[in-house]
Length: 124
Image 1 (tube, rainbow, N blue to C red):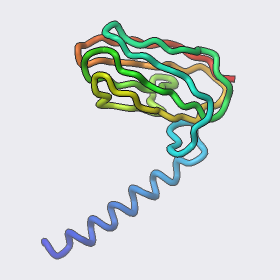
Image 2 (image 1 turned 60 degrees about the vertical axis):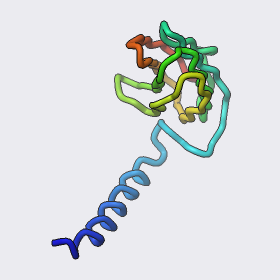
Image 3 (image 1 turned 60 degrees about the horizontal axis):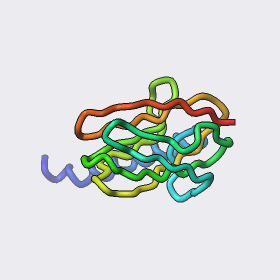
């Protein structure tokens, strides 16, 4: 059985890459593209988004975690995550890049201390 393990791993990796490639063109995470900058500050009470009306296209959310605990931030549409950044350490600054079409979205933030907030944004 062990002799099949490397072959299985290669096939699983290939299928995973195919699934990722199949998602191209949809709104969501687009590593490598910067786009419109938008600041998000995570505090002990949740998050503050610097702009809530954004142009269509690539958006770089620069997340600054000032909550004092680990945080996560995501961009959601219809309750489904389009882009997420988890494990943002206290005091850390990181980028979350998403390509968004015209429509309504939510920025959701959660801290390790249990604070959670959602802020609506409009694109287009």
